Image (cartoon, rainbow, N blue to C red):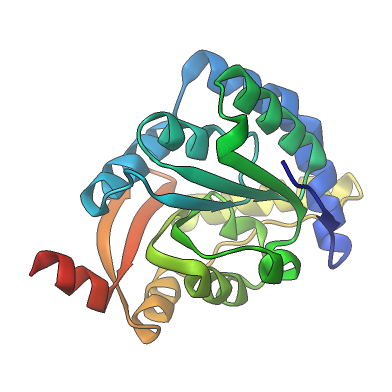
Length: 226
């Protein structure tokens, strides 16, 4: 497994610090409870476009549960990128436990800084990640450039309850002296970005707080339907 560390700014470092403190508990949560409802929704969406034998790229992979689940159920290989080295240490431990060491590679740092070192993938995954990134458009454009089949993402819905919750969380983080901040990006703007890049939405599901979507290239989608 290859690992490098690339942080672009204070926000990256602050995010890495926050999530490093949660790494052990994330691993234990998935070990005992498995996929979250939103992740099960995303897997259902990915089944519609097909992930068997797919090469995966998960940006903000955390402890690796989502892409490792897909590897155990038919995907071929995965690259995981995360700001937190401790998250990646937990992901590596999980990969060893499931016998996946030869089918996964991890990189620590900001995806935008690492993109030139990462090969294209069939499917790019974002599981509750763009809400942790100030420039979602730049992140998504680079992800689209790396995706050959689909981009699948989970991110917060934009409504009053989430505004209140994220506002409270950000005030708490500021009070704790952290530079980390969460963001509620406009789903309409996210979808418009994909449409402008020649992609279409193939799947969408919702919970009270979260939106799960899968986008595919229009040309590739029409070829498969034909």
